[in-house]
Image: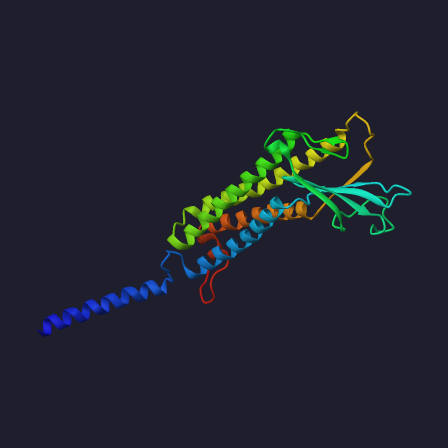
Length: 261
């Protein structure tokens, strides 16, 4: 009887020692150390900020503002703002426009607005804005690239969530590639959209009445897109750093009480 009790006591001590060694190595249920898991969460938080800005940018229509020049003797003037999906033209009261501006705007001022979605997504028709015609191929390319960027970004988020919940560390590199590709696609979409704006300004209709003179300025939606692309690239770099082996960093920054070999 004593022999069996000693045997069970030894097995219990062995089990406790194994559990203590696992705790000493700091392994969590997902297979990541708490320190490494915290770093992954911080990088995911950074990527989430970029993802929020990306969705805000793609979903709003303040990418560029088109402003006509003020007309002497007229009480109203016209402005417009557009994005990837729709355009809004506005009739503003010149009394509301700042006196130091030669052009109508900004488009955020209160006025009579008319917003329409671009028809080249459904019927393939070009849009006409201030007697100017859009170049639908370039606009479609910008929208498709932006949507692809959002899809790849969602795949990157899914990969990192799998890393944190299932311990699938091999997906960390895949998530980094997805976030980096998403940031690049968003920046490419912005550049293509910039070319579409130039094509719009050059596409003056020869039909009367004569097209008004226009100025343009990029607005806050496009700024959100630039910020989103850069933050997603930064997040991808952070995830790639986390995939590197720890021994070179440990030799450069030894822990307190240990000497680097």
